[in-house]
Length: 306
Image 1 (cartoon, rainbow, N blue to C red):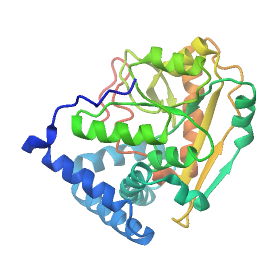
Image 2 (image 1 turned 120 degrees about the horizontal axis):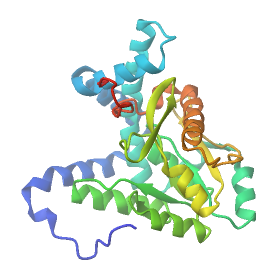
Image 3 (image 1 turned 90 degrees about the vertical axis):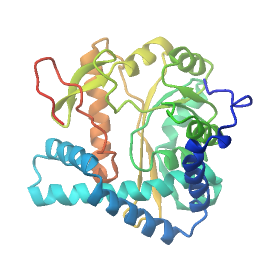
């Protein structure tokens, strides 16, 4: 579960954490900038990262080349650049989601498929919400909170100052922020009727995964989604969210709960989750977090991709 910060050390007395405090102050201030400023600054940061973050650019280029072989090299290069720009804007979207009341953005949100979650609520069940690592991830969580309550599974940050800031922010959006290693906490909350937001679209290593296709490439795909669904009997609800082409409004959409899930076949279940995520990404591929080494873990005997 989320950490108790009431007895946290006084990190502000340690110079090595001063840059973190400065970054947090900048995030809080940026959340109040006019919308056009956020977009412009986000694009500038994204452009700078595209030009100078060579390692992340290589990862992004590799992922997009593997996942979109139907695109010619020029189109792949455009998508790489667009992805950096979108994720630059995502920094300001995250700051807005963490540091401001989401109510001020209600007029910017269209939410489809609410009836699917309303049905689950009417039955008194807790649901496992499948989120996706778009650049809009944390703002999407804030916007979702305007309509439905949910807890969130997250990865604790290595920097204790930023971890405390991030956890407090997410606890303000979600009911409870749950450490990704706390399986019992996830199961307990779902069984108590809470909805838990969980993003299974990253590489967590060989031990936690099976290999299943993702954009036609064998990818280490986490087994935990099916395990949680089996342990709790919870419906698995895919949630899609993205920034619209006008760059001023957002769309959220619940898809119907997955039927006959889990099936008992770990590979088939992982492939099904991957297919749902892939379909969502294809709607707005530039907004996905392609900087992540999604294909880091390879089947035994295969060469490293990155």
